[in-house]
Amino acid sequence: MGRLFGTDGVRGVANADLTAELALGLSVAAAHVLAEAGTFAGHRATAVVGRDPRASGEFLEAAVVAGLASAGVDVLRVGVLPTPAVAHLTGALGADLGVMLSASHNAMPDNGIKFFARGGHKLADELEDRIEAVYAEHRTGAPWDRPTGAGVGRVRDYDEGLDQYVAHLVGVLPNRLDGLKIVLDEAHGAASRVSPEAFARAGAELVTIGAVPDGLNINDGCGSTHLDLLKAAVVEHGADLGIAHDGDADRCLAVDHTGAEVDGDQILAVLALAMREREALRSDTVVATVMSNLGFKLAMEREGIRFVATSVGDRYVLEEMKEHGYALGGEQSGHVIILDHATTGDGTLTGLMLAARVAQTGRTLRDLASVMERLPQVLVNVPDVDKSRVTSSAELATAVAEAERALGSTGRVLLRPSGTEPLVRVMVEAADIEQARSVAGRLADAVKSALG
Image 1 (cartoon, helix red, strand yellow):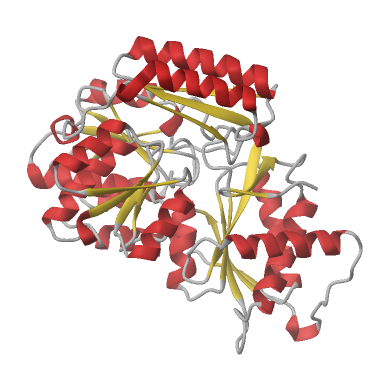
Image 2 (spheres, rainbow, N blue to C red):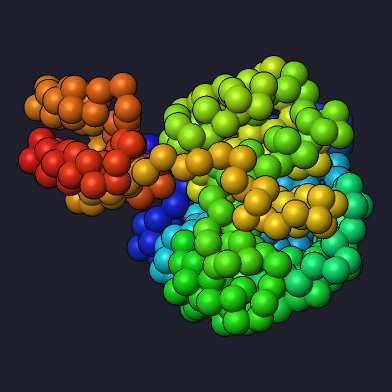
């Protein structure tokens, strides 16, 4: 059995890779591992369990709840809520564990399991490794130590979760959104109720699209991975801006009043200046990944804000922020972490804060986002290759060296295996878009040749 946990939990095709048996077994293993670590010492353990609207989430939720309860953990079932809502409620309710069932921006047939530790923080790598090991041990026949009688976990629905989370979001805004007209694209996902409610309570006039989940249409031609509908709706309705979430609403991308995309780097830049202005940007530092556009780094340097780069993945951004006490970090893809108010990327919170900056300044989002100039960047996904050999292939190393020589000091190359999908990502930045496309095409061919 290969490693189950990727950079963002366990993912796979529901009922093929990610089965009810696997979900149940991992949940039991997680309960035992956390008990061994002392997390449950001296009290009866409680877990918060939520999911996005995928049809497969219904049976996977049942399996997770059954596994936890069979291990003696009481379960608060919060239903369909965003990933950051489950993280928030895990902390706010003093739960020992949180579990979110979602495959985020992936297509509907996929699903995933993500565990949160006490406080709503992602589990440490060593705990995930231990959960995998314990699951594997018992999967081969070693018996579990099972509670009986009053020792088994109890399960109840926690319907107050939505209102509690929305109240938190609106309560941390620096100013209201009155006077703004905003289009929200909910990707037929987990924020379909939460996000419109939060923006409405904050005073915005709303147009909502992609907010009728049926279990099958999540991320289907809408949301943060498909912005065309949002762009058209913003222009059609004369809105001030548009906000798009992904399936579990842990990310946010935006569209300005002209229909132009505002990506995660630009959102980070806008929020960094806003937070510094109100003295909330600790150490005048923002954390992002090596995938961030070079234009973002140059803009932050020009504005006197320090940029710290991490490996790709919001968990690594978060680790850097927690270790050094930084307040803001994120990814180009729209995962933005505002650590004073969230323990993970929160797309609704990010969208609210971005809109609040527009309302507070009276400037357009287009004007605010112009603080940085995006250098041409081309990203090519190369599927069906052995992504484990990215760093060890001599043939690929030679191709990368040739590409770097061609770009010189005006660009850069980054190859990385996806943490959530079976593919390799090729990223090329250059001063000229045609050069970036040409180099990226050659590198994608090299990846296929070397790793196919």
